Amino acid sequence: MRLKPLVTVVMTAAALAACSAIPEKKNNNNVSNEPIVFTEPAPTPAFYALNPFNYDAPPVFEVELKQAAAQPVTRMIATSDAYPGKSITFEVNKLIIPTINSKVSAMKYAPLASANQIDITNIDDFLQLVEGKARHYPPQFSNRNERRGYESKLREVTQQLDTLAAANDASYDVLIRAFKATVMARNLDLGQQYTTKSLQYAQRLLKINPNDPTTNFWFGFSLSEGGGQREAIPYLDKAMKAGVQEAYLSAANNYLFLEQKRNALTTLNNYKVKFPQEAEVTSRLVKEIQTQGRTNVWENLNAMKQGKY
Image 1 (cartoon, rainbow, N blue to C red):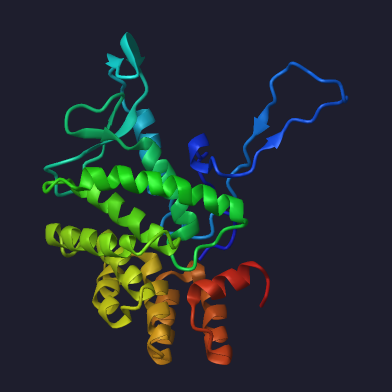
Image 2 (image 1 turned 90 degrees about the horizontal axis):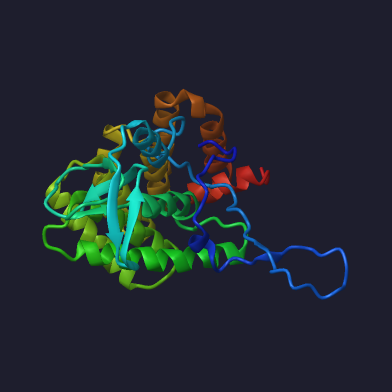
């Protein structure tokens, strides 16, 4: 795993509304009628790689943004519910997904969503950011206020996605986002209901495509980190066979939970062969397991990042 800070997109102001704000300093003590300017703190660097399929590749969200910007724009003029009778011009491509009747990922680029579609740009922006902090348990945050900001925004996003996913014919694109969001809500201890919801979403996704690499990866590690280590094995195996880089680390972590150190070490050695650019980090993980018997890959990586060993 890359331990250097990973580049992230700028989070929307609402995402970290709960974070502390810093008023602009004044040079004198006189009362001023000027408005106070608040500066919102920038998000801290991600801990988990933003592309679990390939740590050296850019995250999917950033790739989609570039592709959207490169596509021709069909300028659209429409009205807004917020401003009845007023026309608004849309002339920047957004990330648009179908909400129903689609069993595969079907991203489109357009200025405005049409019937049975949704502009998913802001949701994907936030999901990428929270993935960098809370894809695995325990989540990694630099301070309590930042975590609270993510928690508040994640509750809002899960409600939006749950509403869309309630349809019997909800699309793959909606379900996979609802699934990821509930897994991370569970990791942030937002409530037992998210464990139940994540299981339901995983079952629906597997019914659509039992071999989907993303579903198998997320379901495998979420089962493992939720206490279902034996049940997680076949899903993590499928994800590894599909080439999901992080699935190897999740599988090794799973074997450590099961106290199967030999299988954990074999998995890490296979990981080092498959991804030689990760050889140094993997060797340190192997040595730590052999000498100290640590039982959580993610905590080991965090200790490395902090220079504890």
